[in-house]
Image 1 (tube, rainbow, N blue to C red):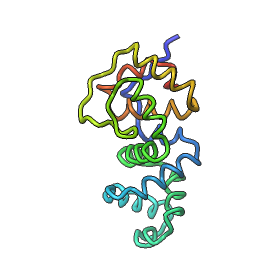
Image 2 (image 1 turned 60 degrees about the horizontal axis):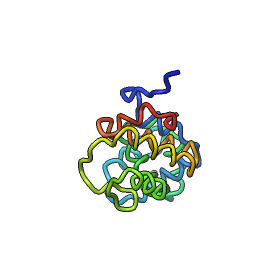
Image 3 (image 1 turned 180 degrees about the horizontal axis):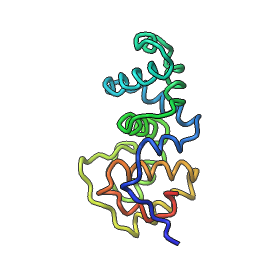
Image 4 (image 1 turned 30 degrees about the vertical axis):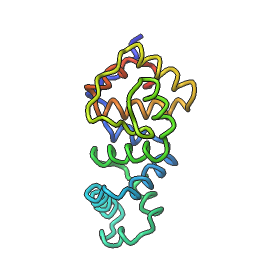
Length: 168
């Protein structure tokens, strides 16, 4: 049985929809609390305003928790917006998992955020062992979303993840 994922079909918006709603709300809160995402936040404001039939100014005046809930429940979300929200979620809520995975691979990081701009694709055996260990330590759904996010963000470096059962 072939369990591999086609990285070309992997999209941030699909990963976003795979997150349970409470996790999407956490991700949206992390997204709104990021200081360097003004352009993406304005995209979110526009999407919420269009969907809710609000003015953009009204959306911006809403409490962050309300904006997060609205963003988490949008029926569709753009690829760049989903990608940024997923990264914000992982940096906010999944640092221990990210750190453990990168430690097992011997990749330099700062609390789960990869330190180097460019890294070499990890050895497949090492990658499989690190993913397997991660799946035994953290919730399978969290591991699948994290590994899928890595593959989606940088398919060149993380192509070996597509073959792993922990991705599904």
